[in-house]
Image (tube, rainbow, N blue to C red; front, side, top):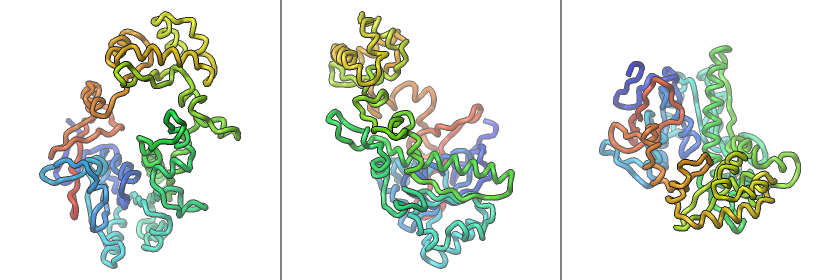
Length: 378
C-alpha cells in the first residue's frame, strides 16, 4: 500500500510521526504504552533498558516471536522500538545517553521524583544537550507535593483517588480492579501532552517539560460518577449511583446458566422497547425514577433474566433496539467476528499476536513492528 512499508529491525511504518525520535527510559505500563503508540505511527523510539532488561519481558504468559521468547505483555507494548541496554550509573552509560539525547525530539522517563536529577539527566541538564527537547516525566503522584515520593503502582493510585471505593462487589467491599486505569490514563495523557508540545514546538521553536502523574490523569475519569463529591457533598455509592449499579438499565444480570448479561443504556427509548416486549410497560416510570428508587424494576429484571441462558438472551435480543450485551470472557471476546472484521488482533511478521493500535487512519494499513530482542537493538 502506498505510504506504508516495513523493514527488519523495527517498524518503518511511514506514519504521521515519521521523523520524530523518542528516547524512552520507561518500563512496565504507562510509559511503554505511550511510546508504543508513537512507534506504531512511525516515530523512531529508542528504548533504553537496564542491563537486565525491562521486567515486563519476564512476565508470563509468553509467545514465540521469530524463535525468540517474549512475554505477550512486553511484545504488545514495545513492538517497533529499538532496544539499547545502558547502565545509567556508569560514566560510559551516561555518555551513551547524552549521545542519544542530542538527536532526540522527545525524552520520556518513569522514575520516582529526584532520580533523574541524581543521574544528571533532569530537565535542565537534558535541555542543555537538546534545547528544544520535549521532556515527559511519568510518576504516580507527580514531581512535587506531599505524595510525590510515595511508592505506588496502579491499584494504590486508584485507592487514593477514590476509584476503588466504587469498584466493589455485592457486599460493598472493594475488589481488585480488572483494568489498570491509572496506568492507562497516564499513558494516554502523556501521549496527548507530548503531541501538544510537539505542535507547540513547531510554532515557537521551544520545547517543554511535562509532569504527568497517574493520579492527576485518572481524576477526570470520575466526572460523570463522583459529581456529588466534586461539588463538596457526599461520596457516591454504587447501590444508589446511576452509573454504578443504582439504575435498572445500567446493570449486570445473572442468567439461567450462571453467566451474565448487561443492560448498558439508560435512555428511556431502550426501557420502553424492552419493557413493552416483556409485557411490563407498567414498570416504565421506575426507569425514569432517580437512581436508588428503581428497586422494583431491578428486581423484575433480575427475575426475568434468570429464566433463560445467556445465549438464549442473545438470540432473543437480536431484533430489539436495546443497549444489551452478553458478558464475555477474553477468549470469547477475541473470538468474536467483530475483532476479525476490524482487524483488532494482528499476527506479527515473526509470529505472535498483537492488539492493533486504537488510533488508525483511513487509507493506511498497519502491521506490528518487530519486537526488540533483549540486550541489543531490535
